Length: 255
Image (cartoon, rainbow, N blue to C red):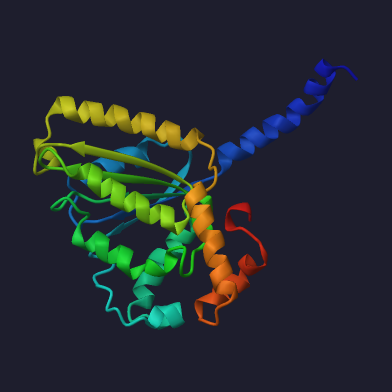
């Protein structure tokens, strides 16, 4: 059989795979570090609307959907379900577990993420590599968006949230920081809005087409280091690692 006939033979199967991909609904979870729909929210909304795939969007607003601070009680280190705020956290956790794309948005507050977003990170500290990393995180893409009403600060917010996602095991993370120089979306000038809209269209296309890849070499090193430590440990978190076979050499990014 020559090469041409082989290609023709495989073409119907190729078309079936392409059609299957088109029919897959992309699940997007957006976690907004503010209740109001300001500039940061509008940019995140432009991004989600720019994805060309069929999509299912689940959106949370902080503090509306998780209005708590970590108490430092260490209960979650024994069992996630005994956290005083477990039921509210579980709604967000279940949504993130199903996500193909996780989007975090937070305005710049004093060169830092908003307090509700920081509280969210603290409440989910068990997701970090040294504790109970979630296998789903190793198979999703993520985007971080931040705005500054002044000139600087949004980039620092993105860097901090990107670091958190990396320590959660997320292998593909894109960031978008911009100084809107306005206190509301309505006040942002038209030229700036047009640029942001174009940026979001490009970013959506980039994220959709990108290969997932695997976590950075550093994160993989940290995972392997912690696997060695957990293997010799009797702490409750070690049971989580054992359940997934990570103490026997399995890797979550290969699952």
